[in-house]
Amino acid sequence: MNVILFGATGMVGQGVLRECLLDAGVERVLSIGRNATGQQHSKLRELVHKDLFDYSAIEAGLSGYDACFFCLGVSSAGMKEDQYRRLTYDLTLAAARTLAKLNPGTTFIYVSGAGTDSTERRSSMWARVKGKTENDLLKLPFKAAYMFRPGVIEPLHGVKARNTAIRIMYSVTKPLLPWLRRFPKFVTTTEQIGRAMLKVAREGYSKKVLESVDINSV
Image (cartoon, rainbow, N blue to C red; front, side):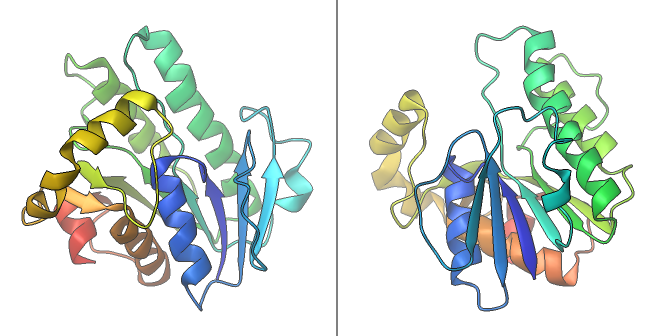
């Protein structure tokens, strides 16, 4: 399986990249982002692309992939809706529409979040935007598309959040995370997300939207 990965420098993306590189069934990983991961591996090719809203200049190198794991995301804290929508909906759909055109046989997996609003009507701005993003991804002509909605995510194997506030939060709550893992409805790990993505990309899943409990059961 050949994989395209967006967001490999983020916390979730770091974990997904690790699992892709460890998986014997993954032959090639193309990491696309504004910054390089700094990792070196025989399977890994990195493509630093500054304009994540426009892929016309690099389309020639985006064909021949079986799965796309889209792990890019930003916090809505302090953002107005139009700004958050641009960095969430517009950015994601720009990549997805390009890949649907070039790789219609691809399975596209998007990391959303627990509490996302599929109705697009609730008062929570971020939940509405994420819901719109999910809904429109599911309409694209991929082989299949799945929405991952993790809740609390425990970073494993040296994975770290890029956001300083989130890193501090995880350092404070770290002693509690192994205990919280007893509640798979709410808590998962970066390792489990990566493994679940690979399995769902290969075998499919009975639901198009996977909550933490589904991610942990894959």
